[in-house]
Length: 234
Image (tube, rainbow, N blue to C red; front, side):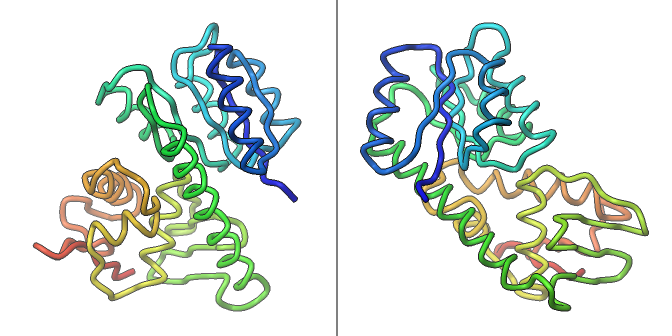
């Protein structure tokens, strides 16, 4: 079955150009010109990936991204007309998986789309391989990761994580005790084509520490290995 992509873009020419090229690549495409219609299509079409413009009439891309993230883990690639670091940081903070600055080449966009969809397929295969077996739970000292339910429990209480924080935590936990470089983490969790830089890893590690460490300033689970990267100790 063809993977489904939702395009949220108010510029008609760009929306039709994106649709044409994605259909040509074998994807099933739906499109919306505003944020409210986009949220309707997320529910009815269950897209595998969303291309989301920031500047939209009515609800802007940030608001749409926040609304999608309340219920769904679908990959979101944000499109911005400005090479604005603030836009990119805000987008990542509210749950976007990647971003592209206009104007961009169709080749680059298709590469980003393929990278995000490939990452999701790998995660699904990984989780499917553990379902129904003891390995579907990663249990540490007062911390449990339930891979079937996509749930993290600390001291008996569910911890609310953004989708990318959850993916990063599972990735690190499954490689407990191994020192992982920032570049390796970036490649495995965000994808080889992601160009956000290794600072993205540092930011997400900091957010995770604030949620799962007793003392984020002196972490006992997510350890920084100076000059090398990070190590998960559980």
